[in-house]
Length: 443
Image (cartoon, rainbow, N blue to C red):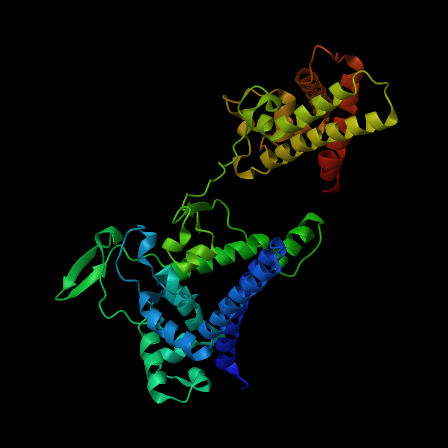
């Protein structure tokens, strides 16, 4: 007989279960026959395994298998909220929340899921019944049909109305808990608000919602589109989709080495659940003008450049015994340019504090005059602006930078003298002109 729709899905599932079971028996038979040299014994072995295969054919015939599955369905429950996530020994009822509501608008809850993934709790030995109920074709599951007393997915397997009624009644027990109950280990707190009305202060774990969150985060990290977006970003290329990330997640384990004790979806996640970070954001403090004796030795500039300084120092130590080549000088120059640019970027941020113009004249500011002139370009004093226009200060700052860099690079294996200082000054002056003075001339 040819099956279609959900009937085909049911037949295919049973056939696949039969195939897997028979394949295991056939492999065992093949192994036993290879290890047995005696012909008579080989015949006996073959007969024994053929009997097992015939028993499986009988077991997985559609009518007996569906009859057994319907009887076992009462041992499991289809739920969206499962109790054992709260405590592995909680024996209360789960909840299958299939409402269509807008109550949850603006809140992250199970109700926002258009098609929640249904979880299964109960006797693991009856898991096949749950899998059967969750078979879906064109957005409609076997469980949906059972809930509406629609037995049509099963009619191709028998025309016996009594048997169909037994299947419907049996499978329906997995959808409705006739005796709903809580359990002390579920730790639910019901707060009375009226006669026989309560607010649930500690609800059951939303397994379906948790599974959706886990899947979304997984897609954002390991999905093909996410990989393409990251590759495009790394290559400096445009991608039409947004990059989505969930920073600071934590992993919680449910069920230990036996995740099936909790639920079937817990098994699908390997017993893991990703928890979203609830930590407050780490705000960067508002930038303030430097008040120390030298911007180059400020904690903020050190924080920005210590890694680059260490990289330059390590590189110079690695080539200290080698003869100077163009490649070495160019690489050294790239490191120095990066440090100069870090200082210029920091200086630009300070210069942008226009609302604090004149800050360099405060008594607490101990910066050298050249740095004051450089970093406080919007100072309202005419005398200050006159000093700035003389352009004597860039050379002073270049010397200060060179002295700072020589101090940072000091090492018993390396000596930095006037030649290096002049090289650093030259690089700084060129970058300063292009970055600051040249820009000012354009304005």
